Image (spheres, rainbow, N blue to C red):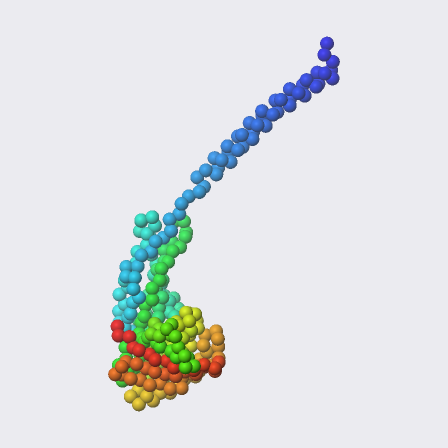
Length: 260
């Protein structure tokens, strides 16, 4: 006859052998469940592709009607909604869904679209809005700029694009950069480093008689920059001015009017 102690041992062994396959089955089922839950989570997103109808920058005569060239936006070959906004650079940084051609400035046209997964895409172009003075009665316009600083220059400071002279009154004007784009364009530091907002009063353009406004800072460099002379040549469509910055630099700027 089997003793009680021996019987207990036999039952414990049988119980252990029964638990092992049950535990393995639970693990197997749990592992399959995790796998099934994770399947289908990964997916491909197609970013918005924006194509400009005309890749070139645009030039607009101040006060005229702007014909937006437009752009298209697609997601995996299918058209999606496109948004357009315009932001000023030198005279105003406001953003609008329409371009105000009565306000000369360098505008950034921002074309943007968002795909179905919420990822944005964008492209930009510049829109130059300016008047076109005859340099006899008006000096407003858009100009390329060549700058000599303290007697020296370099290729990156030749024919820089662009400086705008904005007409603000009957005989008053404002410069987009009173150092001719030296740091903004030549050094490629960007518009924040322009000496923007400098005011000029044309008493008699033919006599090169100008009154200059208060000094302006050179972007985050600060200091005070002011013009000391300005000469206009309508025959060659050029304006030359000298600006002195109290940081110890003199800028000799030659502006060449752009015909557009």
